Length: 299
Ligand code: ATP
Image 1 (cartoon, helix red, strand yellow):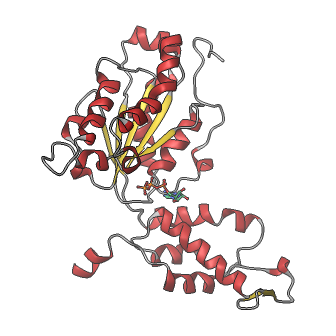
Image 2 (image 1 turned 180 degrees about the vertical axis):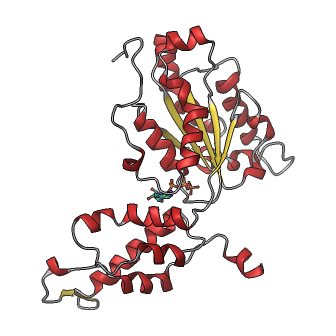
Image 3 (image 1 turned 60 degrees about the horizontal axis):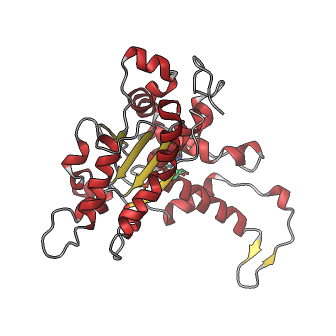
């Protein structure tokens, strides 16, 4: 399924609103422009214009803010295959050579396709979550096993070394930018750095709308639910935590239909079930944000 020369990779009719990403419009556009734009052009054009693709990028910021979501959605938009996801702590393996083997496997498909098709190869997105885990060990004397070192070196060689692959975009992710090895951040490596921070009030409203969309469409969301007010009440919540809040609110709504203990369903018409503002207020007592609160209390 080779794409005809001159044909763009982007799926026609793809709309940002449909992507289910709230409050990250600017970040999304910048990431797209910096790391993906060149991939939209047909390979012959890329060569003629002397464009070099970005092969690595780093997204950093608190957990649950949509880093993985953005990477996946851009992949879909470009019709790339489902990203491969690997996790720092998972890669590190106490068995000698196993970590290297894990990395080798991660790049194997891209490597195979690159050998066959060269720059006509499709884009392979590789997400390396918790990248800091492999950096921590690097260079530590005594305690460290040095496994992190070889993993980092292996990654470097795929990005700009002898095994360099032009059909790969490696997206590193971390909550600890300060832990990332500087060697990885240099030009030609994970060269685009982007912070994805906690959403502001309008971002939170967008995320709330996204995660209550189904309920609204199915007439389950009560009319009294005030997304703007909830956005004000969820300061410091990440997108993932807002998702958790919506789940907790619906659990309150459902609990009116089930007697916990006997697990008996209460004689009520399930079709009448509504998630109300009060369910969200109750949920706010239970679901608290992990990040940012301490700073707030101090300041
Ligand atoms: P981690 O650093 O823990 O890997 P992450 O930043 O990659 O976190 P995601 O995996 O993208 O976070 O987010 C987890 C889930 O939280 C998403 O699948 C989505 O349901 C929700 N979510 C997070 N951020 C957003 C957002 N900006 N808009 C909509 N949903 C979001």
